[in-house]
Image (cartoon, rainbow, N blue to C red):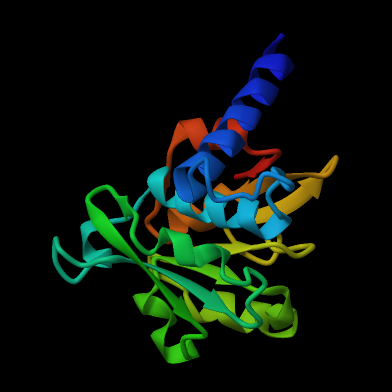
Amino acid sequence: MKYAAISFLKIMFTFTAIIAVFGTQSVPAESRTPSEYQVKAAFLYNFAKFVEWPDTAFSDTLAPLNICILGKNPFDGSLDVIRDKTVRGKSLIVTRNPSIEKLGSCHVLFISASEKNQLSQIIRSLKNVSVLTVGDMEGFTLTGGMINLVMRDNKVAFDINLKSARHAGLRISSQLLRLANTVQE
């Protein structure tokens, strides 16, 4: 029964994420199934809704929430639709390929698989900085990344490294933790 309830929550989270980001009219009638990276873009948006950053992560109360993509951009425009969205009263901006020195200005950092060889260095550069790191590569959370998007049964799911998130001063909602495939503490 518990597994069925969690599976239902995962389906609803995914559905709500896609509708919230893309609306009901954005997918052509002949192809109602969103692409893998449209779903992952919706997850990034929703992760921002279920994570709390310390006040010090923003320069002021009007500062936007910055979602950054580091490395080869696999989203192919899928993140463009969130530019007009807000999370917790903050407007969203998307930054592509910030320099290593500017990674601390990101709030959500998607680290592309193209950066796998530099992953340890990137994670180390963010030590003691409140940046939610998200990836979609094998071993991401084991290397210190916080949320790893994975494909399970042709569906996008995710694993969470809660210890890394807490070390960065981030609070992940218990609702999001319940939806994760695995949570590392």
